[in-house]
Image (cartoon, rainbow, N blue to C red; front, side, top):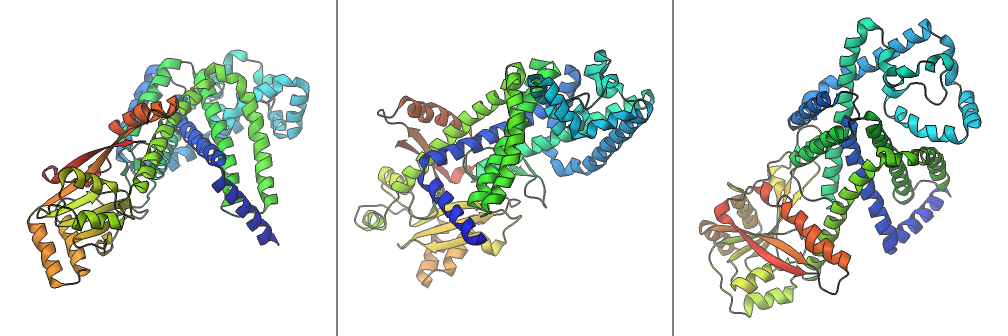
Amino acid sequence: MYYQQGSTIKNKSKAFIEKSNTAQFLLTFIVLLGTGMVIGDGALTPATSDYVVLMAVILLLILFFFQRFGTSKVSCSFSPIMFLWFATNATIGLYNIVNYHPSILKGISPYYMFKFFLRRKRTGWELLGAVFLCTSGAEAMFADLGHFNKRSIQNPEKLSTAYYSSIPTPVYWPMFVIATLSAVVASQSMISATFSIVKQSLALGCFPRVNMLHMSSKHEGQVYSPEVNFILGILCIALVVGFKQGVEISNAYGVAIICVMLITTSLVTVVMLVIWDTNFLLILAFFVPFLFIEGCFLSAMVNRIPLGGWVPFAIASFLMIIMLSWTSGRSKKTKYDSERKLGFEELHRILYESNLHHPSGICLFCADLVNGIPPIIRHYIHNTNSLREITIIVTIRTLPIKTVLPEERFDVAKVGFDGVYRCLIQFGYKDEQSLEGNAVRLIVEKLKEISESTEEAMKLDSALDKGVVFVTGRTILKSKENNGWLTRWTINYFYRFLQKNSVSAVSPLKIPPENFLQVGMLYEI
């Protein structure tokens, strides 16, 4: 009964999402909003460190400069730093409790929390927003939510420096160094998270192409993007210089965190419902309490949006425009390519019934389509009235493994016509994705293994000796005039700008320039 009930809910939910365009758009919107918030969080986390502006900028420049060396090069120091941070915090806390007022421990009791809310009512609810950063950093835990008595807050002039004022003078500077290092570790975690979420977005086709380098031979997730690192560093420094006051940056940071938490809870609930086939009662037991807690914090943070809390929404909105424009353009291009694939009858007519020239050599067409004949071949033949004697349709795939064995790298097959083949080239994330050197010869050797005659194998060798050319398509999308203004702007301006400034899909392949030909195609969408 448990399995049947879960399966029924799962099937109904999955069918609803698959049939409803509104549900699909809403899910995409929420995911992209969460992605934008995480990247915004990555820009805000280093900026929340409580240092003077000049020192903060210098530390940020150093932090982002060292990203190029990879997390694995510096992560060995993270655990000792965090151990020192929490151990010294605990020691200083115990020292202050013993020396000043042990009755402060009564603040652990939930009774005082409820009493505080009953007494302060609306003001108590608003103060939830002020204490939210306690969920992300123990260093901010001071005089909040009524956990401390009158004596602990009777020096309001110490409010902005409550943490450092609690440190005994002899260990002030060692603690300052440890706090600085722990802030760097916290910043590093969000910067690394930004790289990871951009990598995942790239895999889903939701983000403009950027260079993504794998910095570890053991862990696929340790990645680095020079472009993302540069933009994130500039954005972070701009926030520090622009705001200067830590209160506004902290408000922005708090809003970003609670939005990410709420979106994560919502998406995990959808996964539990649609993918994991979890019992509905367990889903409710997870979703309702977290929604209530996070909803309370979010509602308390609303009044902080004008006081710096608008920043993560601005960052997320800007990133969503980029991601939605890219996703829309990519989906329209993919649909256009899929609908205009060459059928076998059309290709047969072109190859055998037209006056087509067949120059000697090998032509490799780089395409995204795994199945079917990509429209770039039709476009190429239409404009050149020629096709090389050996034509290979090449598709590149990166697998979630460290490396692909040489004997498994090339998966070849015949398309069904003399001299026309398909090759799927597979790389691991640490493999050098290069088609220079003897890559084409290895492909030819694989093709010879599936050749049906000695003449076919000799023809392949002869074509290889007579020259090789790589052909890639550069697609330009143009919106039809009868489309709405939003679609026209998205395709003609936003997507085209992103496409022009993104990294080319073939740039990592290191194709020799003398063997490279790019064919421009205009798609009217």
